[in-house]
Length: 368
Image (tube, rainbow, N blue to C red; front, side, top):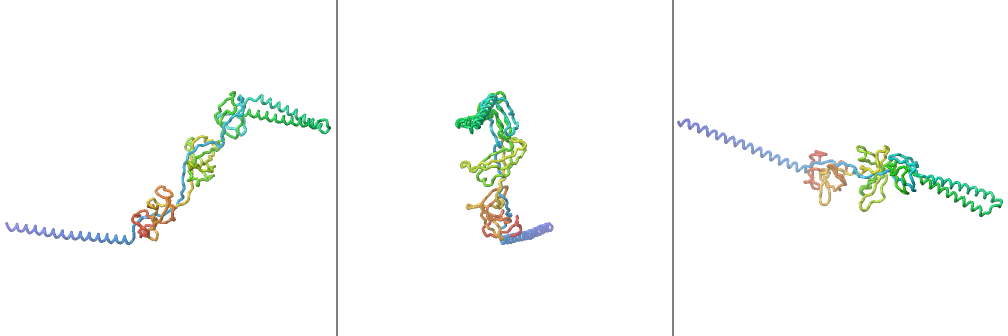
């Protein structure tokens, strides 16, 4: 019995010894591997430190500081009046209709004028008689048959008669209302047979071949606008349509309270689709100066100023800039930057003036 038992004990002891030896061997291999990786990482870090701070850079570009400004204004006709009669009377003829076009000086309304026509004829007759008398006295002047006083009186009477004719003609003309310019009449407030008083409003009258839209422009943008500049216009009264116009006038002063200046835009209306009184949205593309453009991430803030890190001869250089405008992840800045300069966008936290850098990405990757 002791023989087999002793044999089993020896086998178990041998297995334990072999397992311990294997564990010691594999542990040694693991330790060596760990020490090797640590040594490699230390060597890599030292190499990276020698090359400089790793950064990602971007190239500076240039762009114009153009602005698209939209303002709202109300349109009015190029010329617009309210038709009124000079005198009172009964409407005898009526040509006014909504939307009807009239040429300059065309008759749009006439008051009863029979009495005034007769007055004009009477004045003409008196003038003719006075001129005949004057001519007769002038023929007698050389014979001594007519006294100088009588001739002067005849001349005076003839002049008075001419004045009476002109007055009668003017009074007759006041009975007729004419178009003051080429235009379109609005809805009249009277009909034929109505009585109108002196100065009573009859209808609106517009020259809408060109519409004028006025709006207030901030004084900060005033220097970018000039007469003749092209603009775009949209209005709810003509949905889906865009119209082109030009800046026709700029006010000579800035309102000290609102800090704005009045600007007027002229919009041609050859198809007569636009109406006075409609609202317009005016789009102005305002040209600006050219400035350096950098990514937003490149701009750093300090208590004194804004700045970027520029890479010059493999080292970081601080460049102070002024903010001009932000736009879609980029920043227009004013500063001593030129197109093609490289600025740091990642890795700025570890930089200081003169710090050596290693470019690991972005514009100029692989160079320092």
